[in-house]
Image (cartoon, rainbow, N blue to C red; front, top):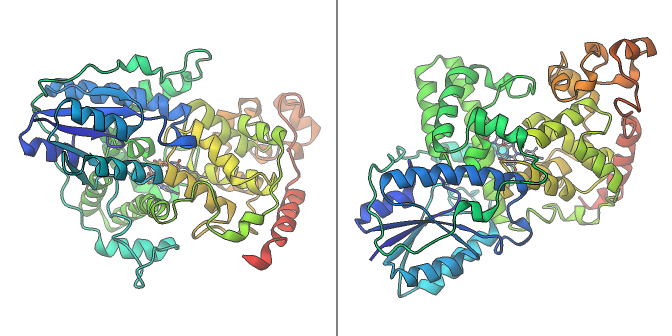
Length: 483
Ligand code: FAD
């Protein structure tokens, strides 16, 4: 009787505990991926992650095929589909790596209950270094502040060495017919908005397990030495860009941890410190997942209940200007266009664009969260929800609401030579450094020299910073007593 390996957010062969378990069982192996647009409800995969999924599954299928046990593709509610499949092939066991989205936890519990007594079910830790229930305060409650959380993690984190990829798989003889990947139409056709995705990822940095491993190696040998300072500069390649790979599980946090530690041990004290700073970001990922596990309404409702009464506005025109990168604040527009073209945005800029949306424009953080969900190739329920609540001032360990980023100063500080803005907002290419982050302050002669007419080639700011800041503070004052 075969063992079913249910691939989900673990699209890799190496360091895959579920797959390893299946191989060790000695049973014929049936690897399956289920496209489930039912269970997640409103959190069904967005356009950008569907694009990534197509390519990632292409790589995984090819790799499994080479090992002798091709990937079966099925569609529908995950628990029902796997339950039926187990009955159809008379499976002895179903094995998977755990997910932490509330709907995924419910789905997996349903399936476990349905299979109880007939088919063995085994689940493994593969997406996190520590399970959310393994790192708790002395009182047994979840951490809501990152620094003590990470301190506690570092004290207990001692991941075993990553597992090797199998070199052969024994196929399931009564493998049923599944879908072809093309049946799922995960790629856009008309309009085809994915040209920039292809250039950046498919033909550039790469998608899939091999690309993830290569990217990690390259980052550790080239980008990591200046990580703590470089990670804030969007105009340089200063971060790992592993986020979509980690989201889809093309690489495991355990592989990242060991590789970074090894590199740190071989390097100088200064390099080791850079590695610790990089692993701290992996720690943020763990923290976000722990928050989602312990506070399952994180994607929809503010962690701080006072924010339920926050007087958000609705302004479709302002939202559209923000989405299209037409706010008149160059660093914001550069970020939103980078997102649209490549499906990824630099972390510093995610914070700046988020702040403009929820503070200057007073639009609800959920509107930003939804847009990111559809447009990011790394869209991840835990990281995205926690990131937006952090920006909104209503989440765990959040920036206080009254701290309002000044988008001009942020631009001048983190993109001092305007390299990032010039790349993504080419209409400002010829603006001198002095005015690149605030073109409306440039004298008419300078604007003329740069070939820019404000309001024609590039918009005037959507709202004056001082005015926007005051409006945000006034709105906050209405709920302040209850925060
Ligand atoms: P690196 O700096 O190289 O970091 C390494 C890894 O650590 C990342 O790949 C990521 O997995 C993790 N990481 C880094 N920063 C954070 C963080 N602040 N929170 C959680 N994990 C982090 N990240 C996502 O993966 N998916 C999202 O949907 C997402 N939405 C976000 C929304 C907002 C409003 C904000 C402010 C941040 C969001 N982030 C999200 C976090 C962060 O911006 C990205 O993980 C990071 O920019 C990815 O680039 P990198 O891989 O080069 O990061």
